[in-house]
Length: 263
Image 1 (tube, rainbow, N blue to C red):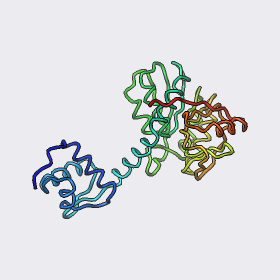
Image 2: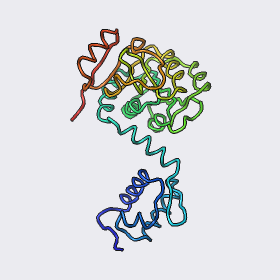
Image 3: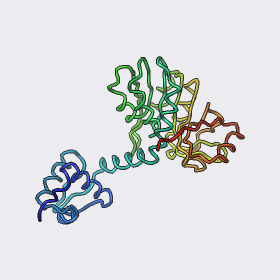
Image 4: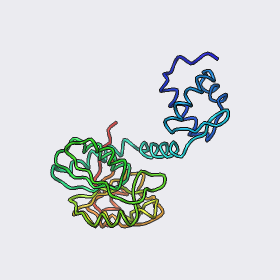
């Protein structure tokens, strides 16, 4: 079968990974047909992907690995409503000054904020997030403190008694934390019950706390409630929040800051 000359090797390997995202296992013949390339080309690509830990070869094909599934899940969560998350991060970074000590939780919106902090000087960032720590590790002006703990299944962050205990060592100027859902009563929710105590502890170790959550999270409870908007300094969300919901939250005593989304 003639090779498809319209895509590069890296594009073809990325496409193979996308195919595995939809299908846990595929044969070499199936992949060759999908990509319009030879089976020999597919074998070389699978050998490369296996060396990178993305797939595991089987007789006549390959299957996805847990690592690859995890990476896809995390990337998908980060990409969801990303324009809104980036807008929220741009608004939140205006609250930060050189010399500040910050706590950033493990949310994907706080990860967008971490990206904007990389060029700051004399900043300390305390976090349970492996992704946030990785984002900041080469920033010369940022001292990054990665909390200890148990790595949460399916997510690059830490939780548990060790995380909670180590947090007691610190006091920060500002905490930024996300939310998997925010109820109509202003309740803050996380989808993982093991993170609830960490979220509560983060708020207790900062002089000010801001919740960073895009407007799709409003009116959408998740598994575990860990607090209320009325307990934090403000919710920073995107400008797509319906005016009626903004008014309702303010009537509850919650401060709401809207961030403009670039188009």
